[in-house]
Length: 355
Image 1 (cartoon, rainbow, N blue to C red):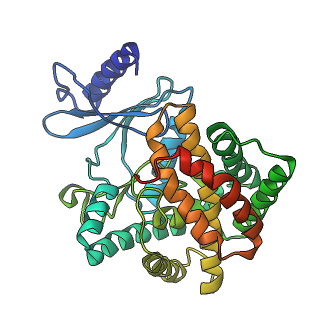
Image 2 (cartoon, one colour; image 1 turned 60 degrees about the vertical axis):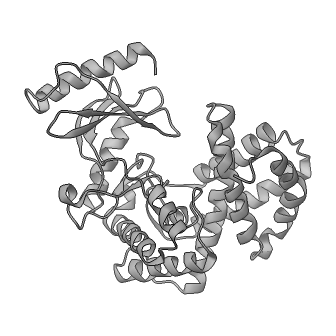
Image 3 (cartoon, rainbow, N blue to C red; image 1 turned 180 degrees about the vertical axis):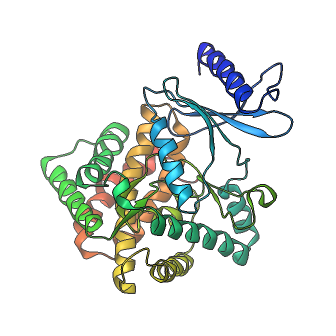
């Protein structure tokens, strides 16, 4: 972030805070950098003495703050805990938000996993699933853009363009491209055949937060962030993002148990139409494979285009998910063989496989 934009953000935050809480703004404003994500947004913390506020820089050229505010309200109306937007300037791309703190699900889950705390882990995942069911039951899909074939295809195409060609430097033959195209069509058809609900689109351990119950209430559930790209799409998309997380792995038996908990809760609340366990698990698996291909491309692009090489360390787990799940689906046997023979050896040589 350049000094000029940081100065503008600091000045705007002081004025906005003066209007929101007269006399609360410190004489000397210092914004503490909190985090940056995979987009161009930047987050800072501002303490007034009485409360802490998050100051957001979301450059209008790349970030849609209107969508952020609108979807935050939609989700909150459905009983999902999203940050309250305290002030916003759409033209500048600046916002003041409630501060959810620093307790992301991921580091807490990693500690529980290391300690073998299965019961405590299950509590957190059930809370996340319950929140997801509230979202699906409470947000009308027609209020969001559709996760249509064009979007699904464009996302999965990142696998071919950014992962295979740009990162691995593969020379794809005509038959390779035809195989990739056929596989994408199969996964698109599978996604479009599912019941449609509100989809967060990045519902995982880095976008869920443990909240202070004294501030937000015991029933608040996890704080949900990074929701501005929400769409209306396949009912298993967010669930597989959560349970086959790019950043933490659980046993297939544990994933199945939590997935079936979702199925029970979603059908009890009528968030989704009635379906069989067999069909649900197929939907869950195929949606995960679509996301795996997309994520390989996105993480490669983040490294090459955006100079965020840290995401390369997460690709091996995504590949592992893809290979483990795809072996159960004969429709993908040809593609899986090609991937194993043409893609995997080069990927192993270029990725930090043991991290």
